[in-house]
Image (cartoon, rainbow, N blue to C red; front, side, top):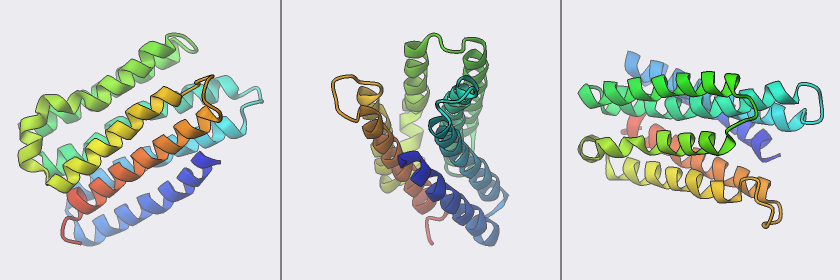
Length: 200
């Protein structure tokens, strides 16, 4: 249910970003909006399908797609930040690292289906927070509002892991989904308001 709502919101959000980029942005804005929007939609589409068809024979494949989409969204979220706000040495380095690690993570997920779940979760967290190595240029090149929303989104994603498949908290998986949606909203607003269209 929560990711179904997220899918609809991501479709609308991606359309808005791409439309505004085509109307007001440069090529970097358009490319970044398309990549970020596509990965955002991919995450919620994969998750919605996995949970909607969980009892079918396609469950295993859909679970792999669901987990691979996490790597795509992490790299997709880095894309506007690195190609628009930080384009240069640090920007291209983070861009290459994000997509390189996403590719490695996806291959690993496909080859190690159903195994090393804890390792995968740690990889998501480390990949999401690796931007800390570029903290100094980020504080120079990104506005306080962008940094606040990006940090809040990262904290929400990370905090949500506490509830992921927890047996002690009622409706823990739904709570996890709410944290994911909230994190997505924070990152979307950071990218829309402060990265792609800071004067809109």
